[in-house]
Length: 421
Image (cartoon, rainbow, N blue to C red; front, side, top):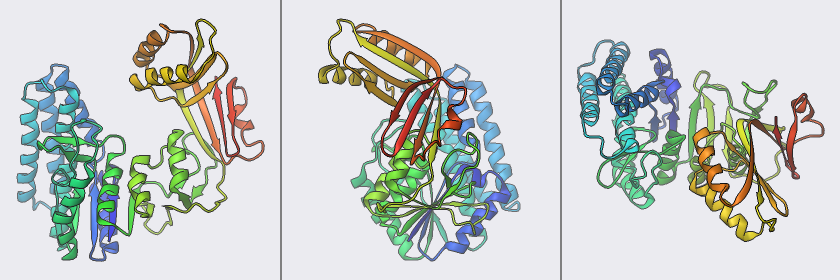
């Protein structure tokens, strides 16, 4: 069986949604599960509602929720040609529950309310699409992902209870697929054992597709995007990018680690563990070959793969008493950075010094430097970039280093990294 995942951009208009349904029809072999995100910009609107609520503007939050509900009803009315009685009932149910959440006392904190409110986007979009599929006489079953994907209560970055989730997939989804039903579910969301909604963090919808695929032992996962394939670099930052038709899980994870906007490692891990290939395809043109991500480790002649990570802070430390940077000092430094949730994007140390780059989050950087200064002499420089080139060729970096000060260089057999001012 196959798992397809469609993001918010693919259903942001009625025309695009009809195209998505055509793709589903063309590829449905009788055993397919489809994961769908919230409609384009919906999650952003729901996040604004949460922010209004915590800015003590409940009226503004409720008004924006009303606007969002009306937008979904208008979308459904156009898609369903006015046959919206069932859809309106379902949308009213979803947005009424969200309204109740907005009216609750704010005792459980921002992250809790974020997850309870933001989940409405995926529930609404899939409710509309499942009714459209039924209108086209496509036999399908809507499944609430929160009934299947069990997580802990780390709101906004929940961890999956794989044993419970695998069991629920086997009990609730496998029988439907065996009957030939198309299963429609949501990305990004799960629930705790107390039935509180949770979200799965960055790239959560892709991760949802991987969770379902791993539990179902799927033959493949396809993530449908508005780009032809994965590229060797971000075309917004680099000219003359080239498509990548085949790439290993390992290489994709490496690129994500360095900051490339590719597939998140948490999505790849369960697929790699079950040896399930991942395809990245273009929903705008189904005929394009796209990219295949798989567990092949044989040598592949990749082109130079480039990542430009902007808005960095270079932090340089030396020991106050000129003692060596030993394992003990390194353990202490790592624990401090970990406590401040500051990912070190490049690391280099000498006898008495330690240098690293982190993302420039001003308040986080300030707090981090204050703690480091208690034990070390600290210097820092902001407004920097990191350029990473994997599978570099001789001289390929030269055009990117023109008119830039190189503050730090690292080089291995496969990777070059530069901190640039």
